[in-house]
Image 1 (cartoon, helix red, strand yellow):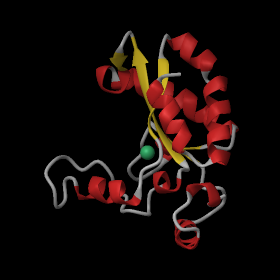
Image 2: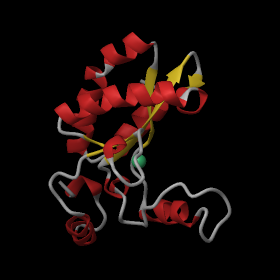
Image 3: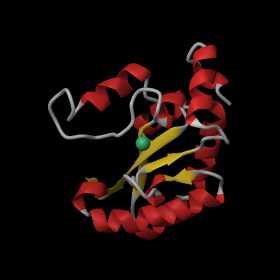
Image 4: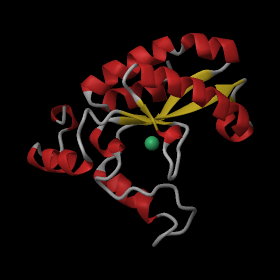
Length: 157
Ligand SMILES: [Zn+2]
């Protein structure tokens, strides 16, 4: 695993992290079959980071990259990751998005079988690289829990 993947794993809620580690191991045959490697390119995002991302394309320059305000992304709870696929040193998501899509579909099916939700199936704003686990909570529940737990992602589940 790369330094970036390890750093992103370290920021996650422990329960989700354990699940993600199992998922990455289970995904190895898919990676080998397609000749790719997987990185976790984003994990925990602080509420301030999320607010800055939300501003991009709205009140700040740049393209819109998220529809989630601070506290409304599962990244803000350490319960979501974004993957990146790499082949021959190239970032497949932009070098060959169709191929990346096909691989995400396989990864999404594997994730679902392990209790991880794949955002590639979302009807509005589907995100192939995004995987999460709500642990049965609604966002409102997660929000009030986070506030009462002093924003400690280790206490959310
Ligand atoms: Zn994401």
